[in-house]
Length: 438
Ligand SMILES: [Zn+2]
Image 1 (cartoon, protein in one colour):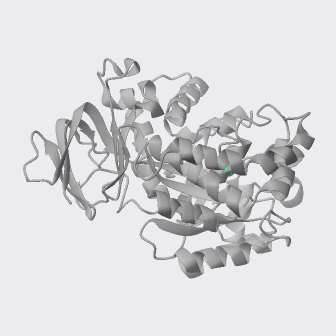
Image 2 (tube, helix red, strand yellow):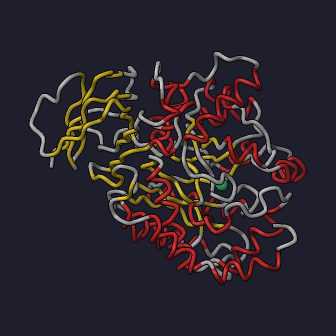
Image 3 (tube, rainbow, N blue to C red):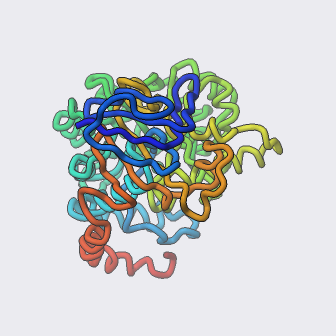
């Protein structure tokens, strides 16, 4: 079924950054057929009036832990919370059902905010894949591998066999892409990091982990290995074009060379990095070194919201402040990071990330009728600095409409919230013992 959206400003995010100020996009389930200025030149089955809004590619969130919705706003100001209550409460309270219902809720939030592709890593990740398949998002899903007992494995490193199971089950799916996701550089043994990498190579899937994020991680590598975590990963032989390093806050010029030379990608999480007081990542230097950097919201516990608008505003604010330079990180560059460069991080730039004939029709229509969207002089600026998730009117993934006039087409958010709320009773009871710190 051919759909044509017209009377919109089209931000293609293609190589030449084409903008069609009074544009149209014609597409179907197999991909984008045509885009340009003026009236739709061919017949379509459905016509969508863009009402002078902004049409852009679906956004790509390259680092998330979607099922952590029950933890949102819990202990936000608590130091060392990962070990004080996050790890213990996950172990005690997360069940496959809670992961599934949380994943459904979080995916609804992603779609409603215009995120059409997400990379997720958590436990019971098969449930995230299931929720993603049902709700129509594109998802890169990784079972967390970690050297301690988890909610889905009594044995440390039980995530590795679960990861292989996940890959065998979902590899080849059109929208759900399994990946290998060791937790972090210092929560896995070097041997396990390497073994997990071999699995990623065997199945030709991405390999993603937290890197150079925590102070304790940096101390550990300095004391035990006399090198940086990135130097360590390089010597271990796990940096590659398929490797996605999340955070990379505490990095050196030598680290940037290693990342660039190996083709390793970076997931930048400005919101969670700074909310936790971890530091401002040297994105300027990493990009100058030729490293591809995408944007991650991090989980709802670390980043609170899953949309990219929140991150869009924070990235230039922190970078401009760090360098006392208003001219760096212009709005267009930020939007590239949230679309085509995010697609590049996932190795999917041939399929998604820009509005070009032949690519998948992952599209977001932003309305400009709301109070915060007037006037619009520069559409990139309007998206990065003026817009928020509430301005997302409609969303398509692979040509299929998943959000229409601010509502999900497959489900209702109130229904999802009711289901999740009911499933959270036991979780909230178990959380009581941490009441003094959360
Ligand atoms: Zn994370």
